[in-house]
Image 1 (tube, rainbow, N blue to C red):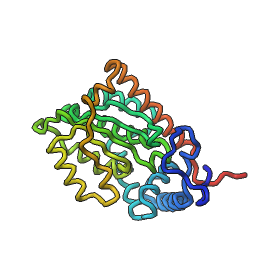
Image 2 (image 1 turned 180 degrees about the vertical axis):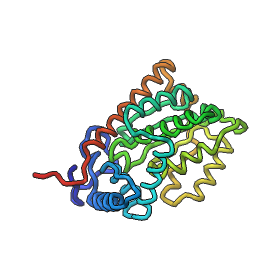
Image 3 (image 1 turned 90 degrees about the vertical axis):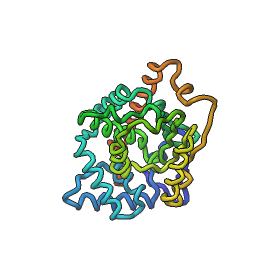
Image 4 (image 1 turned 45 degrees about the vertical axis):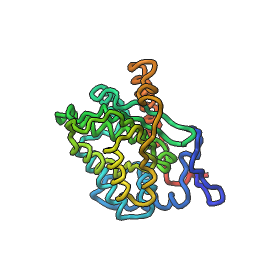
Amino acid sequence: MMKKTEEDPIPRVIGDIDDPRRMMLTREELEWALEVKELIENTPELDNLPDMMYAQIAIITKGNHEDAFRRAWLLQEFRKEYNILDTFEEGLQMVTKLVEILPLMLLSFSFSPSEGTFVVVNDMCKLNTTVLNTPRRVRMWMASSYYIHSALSADVASIRRGCIAVVECEGMDWTKKQDFKLLQAMFSQLLTVYPFTGEFRGFHTGTIFNIMASTLRRILPRHLKSMVQTGHTCEGRLDTFYLVPDVLSANQRLISRVTSALQMRYENERTFSLEPHQE
């Protein structure tokens, strides 16, 4: 890992996925990450983590040691509770199973050069938590969410920039029974370590959704308020743009792209080091 200096700053948006700067830390981030590593590795009740995860926690917590400890602990407990193996092979298996059990909920996964980060597109109308009615399926839901967020955080630049979530809301049935405890568990447990720091873009949001988003904005910190966007529109639902030329092809493309990003994440974890290279 090469260091960057203040005279050679890292751009906020790096559009080339192969640009080596996407795996570089600023001087301040490096200091934070080394502090996080020392904190965790000197805390007996915490498991050691890859250097890249130390960097991820550091970028999120920005030098707050108490927050870093809390997030590392929550990550550890999440992995234990849902028996997350944290391997590429299990990740591919869990994401494939999610696409099978909740068909068409995930519409697209891609890297956007113009945004310099990853974009995930969901259809909220296809979310049906009532099918997650066995411990095995609950684990699949949590594990697949873990691996998708790992793929969305494939390199340092994507962690720093944050992912972009695009959500189709047209036709949402607010009377449909949902297990909101599962959704709450994902947000309260997983998203403390993979926090949403990019943008949420809601398409065809109705009155109820807009009211919920407005309420959410009131409790968010100032720097996060603008990230929750509603009222986006386009000609037709988003699925008409992404499920082409057919559903089978779209699902294969989706899984292929998640696979590539997940491979990138694990390869970056394998090679990334906080220690300076010896000349």
